[in-house]
Image (cartoon, rainbow, N blue to C red; front, top):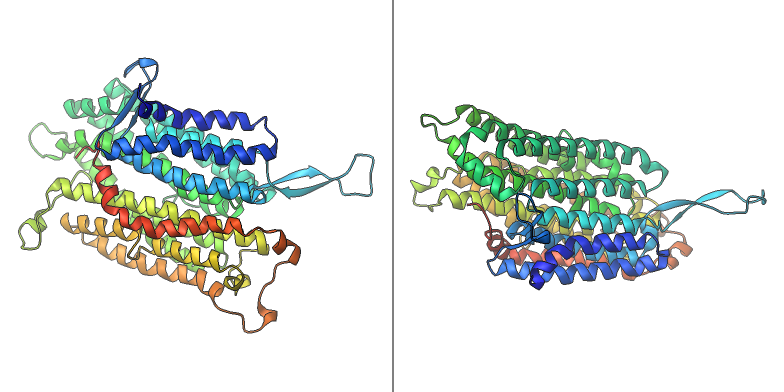
Length: 546
């Protein structure tokens, strides 16, 4: 076993072990263990990403039992990119939580002995000790999803991510408990639908291993009806977890009530696990074998053609609807965190636009012209690479925005946009970070968001789907509008000192300056990673089915 293979297993087991250890540790020790775990995960991520960047997939059969009997861990280009996102965002948020423990949630504590009737019996206070075990266990689940080579362990990792995320939302206090309960129902229902789909795929292919199942689907057309039904269940279950319109109502109250360190994790990482599984099932598992069924030759399963066409156009249409609805709802918000949450609803829509191109990447519309010639594989690769770039850019930028919004809410006691007028005067670093993150979310040049939209637009033109260009342009204009609505009051100076909201001096004095550099680091990365668009596309080619 090489160190790279060892790192593949350690990415799952190491944060899971430290999560177990923090359960019995004092709270101050947990604040040390958390950043050390982030450092350890980064150490294990580097060799895996380096190997994949060199053009090699990494595999590890636990206890040397091969598929279909054993548990196979596997990292390809898609895994490496999402591991990078989890390591960067997870590490920065962990450091922020260690520096500002009051942002990790609130708990109800006793304030007096039972015999002292003069004092109130209980009160709410910050720094919830359960944050670290839950977050580190969630991190282990995320890594398990990203490196799982079989469908059942993907389900196990997805379930671990969902349950810990629900508990993290509940750390926001009594007001967050209804939102957490609703999120629990959504998470369990989505996982149940995915598990039923896994059972269908197992019955059709006889294996849970993703690579083996993909080959069997390609070789045996009789499996296609079961695969189509499984894809429908997977899409519905993961659309619930991704908060795709019209299944998005749970997301807004969950973000509004979650602690300041939890909202970045939910938006940047937790929903990315569902997106990763959706891409894995559609592009890596089913597309290589289902593409022949789109050939209307004698003997081809025409029913699969009709059902898949309806399904992928339905997903693409809901994606376009999400871009518009999420952006319009964001414009209507008067509070910062709900506005950013509705921005996530809009951004999720972009990730579904590529579905009409999937399985039908026709580029004849350009091949007959003197513009350019794109092979079908290039169109599909561009659509998937653009979708992944949008997701990665969103993860970094949205984590920075939510951290900044949570910091302002903790300091001023509100996230009402009008009440935060002139906050940039007191927190210039924080507002500058929000501005850089807004550049990435709007998809402006020098950001991964721009790279992703450009790749999706190019693939859309190559496939003849010109309507996607209108969605991308309109979504960009609306996102610029609601982000300007969020940032403008923070940048405009108050007309007089009395109109500017001032936090209590004791709160302002007790708030350290150092945590503000966490969103600033994410804002800087939002801009810097825009230069890595070509690298991410080349990494994605490693182990790709096209």
